[in-house]
Length: 411
Ligand SMILES: Cc1ncc(COP(=O)(O)O)c(C=O)c1O
Image (cartoon, rainbow, N blue to C red):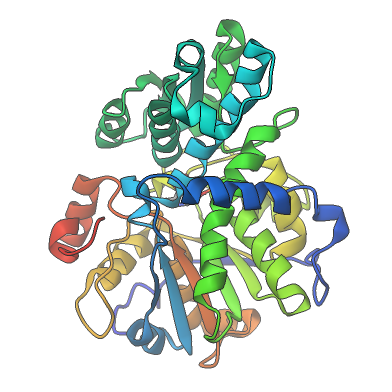
């Protein structure tokens, strides 16, 4: 690879001495993300209009340039037309919330199908869901609220772009701007919801709040189930590089792949922005650790200072390595993916490329590649978690719009 930013990359790496190696998925973690919840999520989400399995690209050209044997890229840009994998989580959790609350109001069991059919629309309309977001989760919750007919309020900190705000407002949600960072908006939601009787649908879990984040992760597991089917009869991954915000995505992917591959599970590497490294710091401390976000990373979806407690339990045991990368690696990787060449041109947003950027940087450092066991025989899975979720930012970085990069695709 000729691009030089990877040679100069500033990364940090921590090998997790607490990771459980060479063992099947532990019994003690079984109840965090239950098989039954994941199976139900899959059945429900597959039935939604617009569901299709997102592509798993095999990027042979880029694999060669980076120096690995195989590179799988799960491309979430087209997920339900919402631009990111988050479409699977928040919207599904809205349905789970309604499935819990409506029976209390009508005094009898109510099925998901009845809620979706609109027969309880009068009651559903009276319920308000609320969440904090840096863009993608809020968009998913707003989309779910519109689908099922409840009211929706989305809290956004000042660092979230106005285009991301508009996209959510276009779905009919009320957007409330708050000062401070993402974590401050999470706390504000908690306070306002309990004052007003609104229902928090968060993608992060904290003490006393676990049910819906669990369902959000069950929604994400649909993506991992697709990946497992897509790599059948192909070289199984030796490594997985996944980006972390609060860790919900990484936790769900780690859980499902560990269950699937057992003792032979791939080496799991979590990548975060250096400006928002709460999972990295938690790994160093061996317990959930909060970091104060003083500067916003360009990887907006990953700008979180507090880990999700549920996700942390899985990652503490199942994540082998934690890495951070600096923001300057993001644009070069977005441009690499947008190229027309041996591989298909891919539209990847700022938060989508963090895992791949971590891999590219690691492979350019002899020491780090060795520490991570990466070589030309490695088969690596990365997750392109979003497309051009802010089209203006995308075009300003890549120099072309998403439509120009991949005209035939739904970005
Ligand atoms: C595009 C994108 N990728 C990755 C993540 C990280 O997911 P999590 O916060 O569950 O770790 C997010 C979170 O919002 C995101 O929007």
